[in-house]
Amino acid sequence: MRSFMYVLTALAVVGLAFWAYHENYKTQEALSETAKLNREIGELRARVSVLNAEWAYLNRPDRLRDLAELNFPRMGLLPLRAEQFGRVDQVAFPPLPTTLVISDPVDVTGLGAPQGEVSQ
Image (cartoon, rainbow, N blue to C red; front, side, top):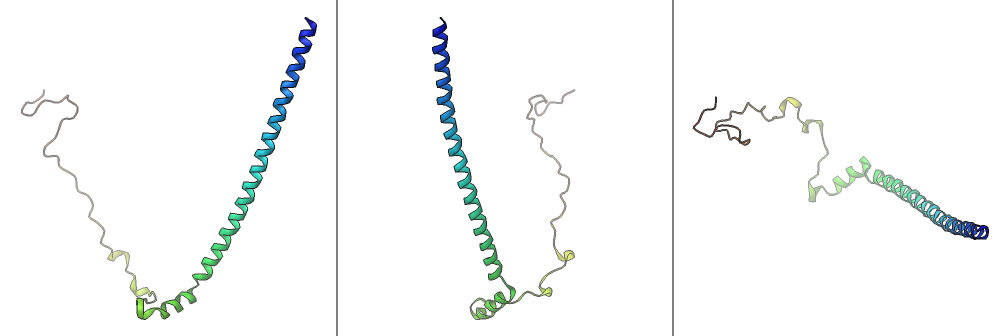
């Protein structure tokens, strides 16, 4: 009986070692994938920074003014002036809603009296 327990213990140790070996490789693979994703995120953030800088460069006011002047005959773009904007008191806001009068109510609960009858 003692030798059976030794064999069973040895098999358990071998099984646990096999499991730990595979878990170690799964962990190493997950860590390398995480490092790869972090590198990719860093590269994409750098790319976004470059694109933001290019956007800011292309949207310089002097460049846009020159483009508007260059394309004026075709597009008719004019620079914005303060007189082109209205004041808040000139805005036509929609009227406030008035109270609604229910002229023909409909009973949806089934607890009310049918039309023509008066409940007490």
